[in-house]
Image (cartoon, rainbow, N blue to C red):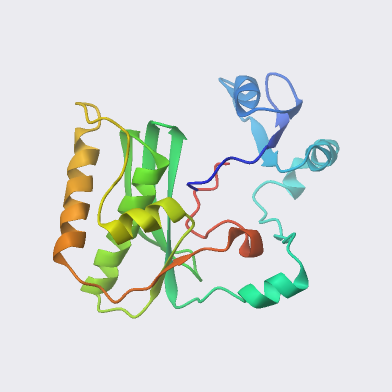
Length: 214
C-alpha cells in the first residue's frame, strides 16, 4: 500500500445521489449520513458503469475473481504465493491520517494481530510497524514462515533498521512514535531468520492483509 494510488471509479447504488463518481471525495459526499449506503470502487469507468446497471448484490460481499493483466509468461515466472507465510498491511485514511495495521495468515486470512487505530500516522509507518510486529511474532514462535508485505519503502526501512518518516512527532502521535522507537530497538537488538518478500500485487491481487477499503 505504500505505492501511488491508481485512478479509481466509485459506483454508488444507494446514496444521496446514485451513479459513477470519479473521486473518493465525490463518492463520500453521496454516502455521508445516508443510512444503508451501498458503494464499491472499480479500476475502470466501464466496469463501474456496468456494475451500476447491474444488481449490487452481484458485486458487494463477493470476492471478485482477480484477473491479472500480466502475460502468461510473466505469471509463470512469478509463480504462486508461498502459503507457509504471514502477510502484513496498513491502512491510513489521509496521509497523515487515522492509521491501523495488521497481520494475517496468508492462506486462511485469519487475523494474527491488529494495532490501532492511531490518531495520526502514515501508511509507510504502519507498513514498517506491521513488518517488525510480524518478525517479532515469528521469532517468538520459532516459525520458519516467510513474511509478505506490499511496501518496498517499509522493506528498505526494516533493512536499514530505521523508520525514515518525515512525519513530525507531536502530542497527537506520541503513542505511535513510542511504538516506532520500540520497533527500531527490536531491530537493532535482535537477529531473525525470517525472509521478507514483496507481495506481487500485479500477479496475485491485493495482499491478504489488505483492509479492503479502497
